[in-house]
Image 1 (cartoon, helix red, strand yellow):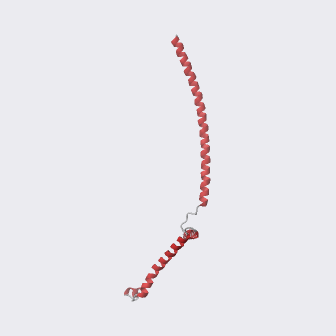
Image 2: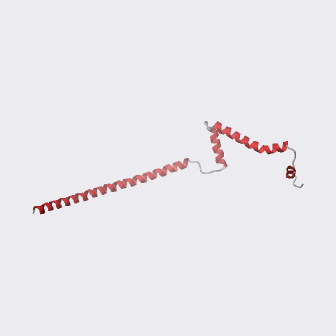
Image 3: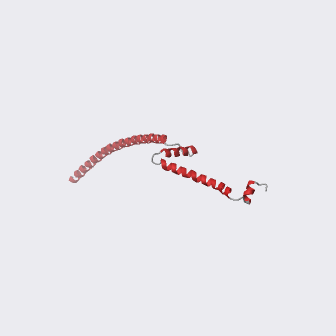
Length: 127
């Protein structure tokens, strides 16, 4: 009999523990739901902020074009820079001189050399 009352006492305590655990589980689930809701709100706010920052960044960027005017504008901006400006001007002058020299070499060779058969045929194709 004592054993039976002891077992009933243990059963009663087990039932109380189960009720307490189910109450705690409900509280924990409620807290988890609240945390999930706050997390979703924070994610929405974050996504909104990222979209606003992306629009601001895109507004400040130069259009994605690669035409002569954009390159000329970039070169002029570099020439106006106080740190790199003198180097850019120097490189631009050297580049122009190199092109002029390469283009004028052929003319200088033709002027200093005597006429060859190739030159005569190139100048007067009827012969």
